[in-house]
Image (cartoon, rainbow, N blue to C red; front, top):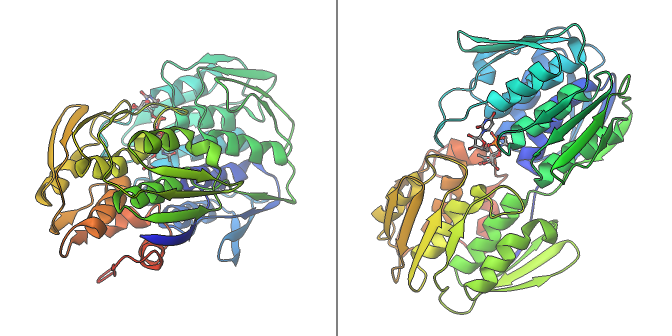
Length: 408
Ligand code: EPU
């Protein structure tokens, strides 16, 4: 694949910042909003709670949360949408209560929210989980110190949301450092919050009386989408320049790409990635940022499935993120996955086959696999991919891929 591709705003920042607008008593404008189905669901849920949302352009929305009429998020909508847990922190903070349906079963394995709950309780909330719902209530939230037992993006952001308007100072120790954690903190600070240390493992939030609206915030570029196209360049032995990205956020992937024989040229907000030979084997361990992102594990798995030699991937975050390997094996790969480890015996080429996307990143990986495979690949379950990638087939088509959507 050859050419240029523009990266959209980050899904995992957008699905937190949209509920975070509930903390603003007024109107704000979000720019660089990715036009993906998770964002649309997030906006629809907010509207059900009384917010007024207007799309100002393809990537910009205005959100008016002056009037919130409900603290109960519609069960049917939240259960389809994993990031709905951010509604708990936001509604608790703004209204003193929240009731949200627990997100349903997950294809990545168990997704506990014990650290979110521990944080809310430490701030003074009563939290109840029953009949598939989580409810939280607090007369007042008071700042405190919270040590996260595990590094969690969701729990870090949720505790930040819940403590922004609390009395006094909250300290989150062992906080997640992902770029989207920093982005949510930057958004809240733009609206008047007092959050320091986001991007390190200690975040201090000093409660303020209210967040003012009337501001505009631009969502950070999606480092996982950028990483997906970087790995597509390597898998296809192509030459792709990625625009609207933050190269620093991809340092870990850049290092891996150099290690397997690819080339990377860094610009201010762009990256050129190319590869003129067969990638070589390597080992990968996924870990919280700045480690290798789990959300790029299936995509690098495709590269390693055709690399020269035997590679091992250790999945350090999710229990069940190797379902895509069975699909790659249908395409001629030679991968043995057991528990959190998979061994990739590199093969010379992949062959087209009908395959199923078990989740969002598995879907992106299988698109790359289909593009580099000999013959035709049919990919099913596109709904997973549409949750997090904007116009993915058009972006790949512009890079020279022969790809079309046959059915929604
Ligand atoms: N964990 C707990 N208790 C908790 C929370 C998490 O034990 O209360 C564990 C999880 O089981 C997991 C680890 O901690 O083993 C990390 O989970 P984390 O909370 O960081 O994940 P998340 O916030 O639910 C976000 C992304 C995921 C991404 C992970 C890890 C969003 C909406 N989702 O999930 O993104 O894989 O962080 O980086 O931000 C994706 O985009 O495809 C995706 C799955």
